Length: 107
Image 1 (cartoon, helix red, strand yellow):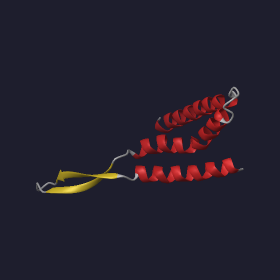
Image 2 (cartoon, one colour; image 1 turned 90 degrees about the vertical axis):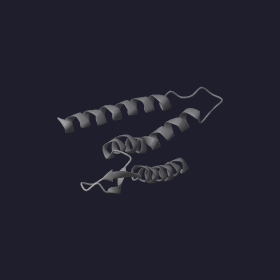
Image 3 (cartoon, one colour; image 1 turned 180 degrees about the vertical axis):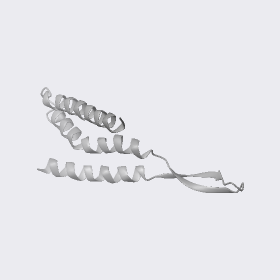
Image 4 (cartoon, helix red, strand yellow; image 1 turned 30 degrees about the horizontal axis):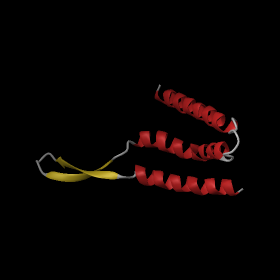
């Protein structure tokens, strides 16, 4: 129960960090039609890239943590196969679904 509560807290912090990272902007100097220089704010992240990569990482963070925890919970014995295999299987499924959905949306 404590592990799931910890994962919930860590995921919440991660999602807040992702929001803060993707909302960053930088100031760029541009010239208008009359030749005056003006400063505009330009987002650093492309919103599509940020949504696909960082939010997918944020959604998979609890699963990654659980697999890491199950793999390294008992250091003295051999690690269980379920931890890394679940991570690899789930990550590949998520990658294929995200890629397939993106291709379907574009075409």
